Length: 104
Image (cartoon, rainbow, N blue to C red):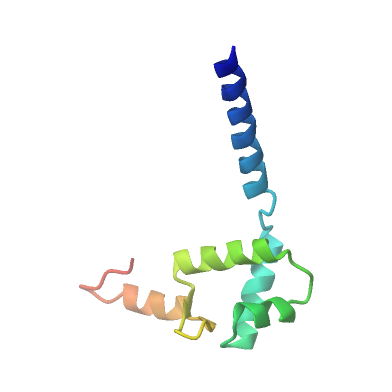
């Protein structure tokens, strides 16, 4: 009987953790707003970006968006913690047409 209670409470903990992790899922509008602001600012820290956003965004949501941008290769950072938008779709299209080059 004790094992059943533990298993049930463990399941509840996992469910709560999943809800917390998904509680700050950004909308497309928020992602596009962060992207546009980052492009306008140029080089900045995450804190500067957070303060420059036109609308309030929950900080964990902003961190999630930044992690997404890193994973997709849209932004880069230096040793001082400054981030900058580096993705250039026109350049990618131009190089993807050259024979012998692969774009990942």
